[in-house]
Every structure is written in structure tokens, then in C-alpha cells.
Image (cartoon, rainbow over all chains, first blue to last red; front, side, top):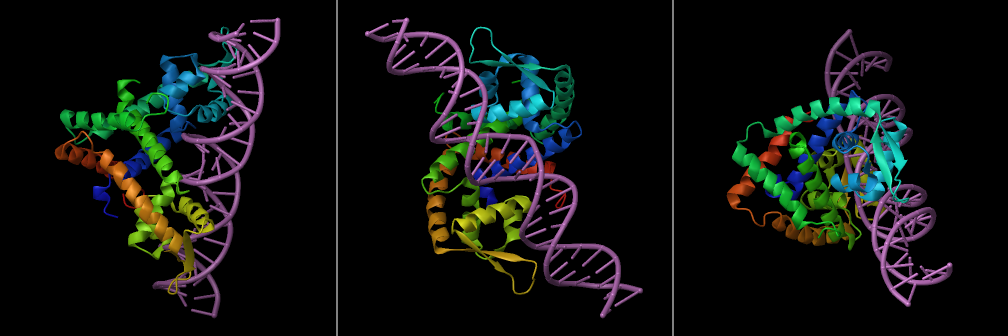
Length: 144
Length: 144
DNA sequence: TCTTGATATTTCGCATGCGAAATATATAAC
DNA sequence: GTTATATATTTCGCATGCGAAATATCAAGA
């Protein structure tokens, strides 16, 4: 497949490997990586607007709805209508969600460290810049 | 997002941005990025075993079945039982599949080049090595 | 031959994610 | 105040991808 020369392919495979690893890690807690991401964000922004969560995690709003649904069904978060704006919904962590979020954060920290194994700080910086550059090269319509 | 999640988050977002870009590029051809990947691989390995395609693209076999189904339905490939091994299936490109594959390759090549914009050869090499390293850090059970 | 185990693929149920269209509410224009 | 438009979220249909289990076939061994 001449994978060596195709960044598209490399990135795709790398992403899938990472997701599988995270999902296996969090499976013990009946969490998925996407849900872990939401818990993590809400841990620092409890009660955030659904739209803000969607934007922060770079998930399309329509995808965020289902994600919030499943997490609400699992008892990890609760929706509450915003007092100011009747269109908005806020996502609040439940006690269970807070607890799971903390544990998931510990696990993912291990994985994140592993991602840097074998690479110098300077190299990780290059990688970070490259990953970030994709956001500019392929902007969402909105922030383009 | 928090530093401890940084690379995980960056990789996830980068992947989604890339996929959206590819999907928009290929949408004009009624192709998806996953299907483009299959066409690309078959372009060099026409008649490959389904399992080999699955492995080459790092897609789980059960996911490959549906992908092949949809592509067969779209008239891009054809399944043929292997003469030697009754369990195996081979994937063959149709004329339409060949044609679409060529055009998709041109488009994705542009995107692939864009991924390197603003980075030196040495930097891209670091990125490539990092992406590749994930395959060793998070191996499939099989090739672990 | 019969059985036992390995291998290739499929089926199933589920979670994720997208785009387009619908819905509901807010805000501006008149 | 009513209408037009913008915004937040949801609904819908679809494609992708996973893991577990089923199916079919092959390969060996008793």
C-alpha cells in the first residue's frame, strides 16, 4: 500500500488504533471515547451549552444530540433548558458522570503519555503543530 | 482542552477535519473516503482477498463486509469466490470502479500534498514516524 | 471417515458522525 | 405588532466501524 508516503492513510490508521485503545481502556467503565471526551469537557465546564460542547469537541451539532441522548440515558449527564434562551440546552454532570469522568481522565492520561514515548519534546512539538495545522487547512465552514 | 488530553484530542480533531475534507472532495463522485481507500488499494491489487483488503486498510473484517456490500451495490466492485479456498472471496474492480478510483486518486493526492504544506521534509518525516509509531504502541491483537 | 480445531467471511446490535431538513425560539425590520 | 430572518437543537437517513457470535470451509489427527 506504500503507506509510508501517504499521510492520509497514516493518519487514518493511527486514529483508528488510538480509538480502539481508548475504547478498550474505558470499556471497563462502560464508557466510550466520545463520551469520555464529553465528561472531560464538562468536568471543566459543567452546565455548558450543548452547542459549546459540540464546538469544543469538534463534533457536528446533529451528532452531539445523539451523544447527549445516550449519555443521558446512561445517567451520566442531564439536560436543562437555559433560563435566558429557550432554544438552548445546558449539559450538567450527574454524580455518576463526575465519578466516571475522573476515572476516565486517569486512564487517558496514561495513553496520552504513551503517545509521546520515544519522541523528544521538540518532535512532539512538531507533531502537535502539524495536527493543529489541519484545523486551519480544513476549516469548518463556520470558522473558515 | 487540558494538556493531558492534548495529543489524543488533537489527533481526533485532525482526523475528523481530514475525513470531512476528503468526503467533500469525493462527494462529487458519489464516493466516500473509505470506498476511495478500497478503490485505491484494488487499483494496485485487483482481485485481492477481502481479508487482505481489510488488513491493508486496517479495517476490522466485520466492517469490511458492509463496505464491500455497499460498493458492490454501487457497481464499483464485484465479489468472486476463490477457486482454491471456498471460504475466501476476492474483490474485483468493475470498469466504473477503476474509473472512479483513478479520479479519486488525483483528488486525494492534492489533499495529501496539502497536508505537507508549511512543513519541511524533516518535519514531515517526524510526523510520519509518529503516526507509524501508533501502530506499534497500539497493535491489533493479531500482529501484536 | 469422523472429529477437532483453525481460518475467512458474514450477521447482528450498537455507537459514532455526517448532511439536509425540520422545529422552536429569539431578534431585527417594517 | 407582525413578519422576516437568524440561531440552537433535533430528527432523519445514511455510511462507517467495533466486538461477539454465527456460518462455512479447510486442514489435521484419531
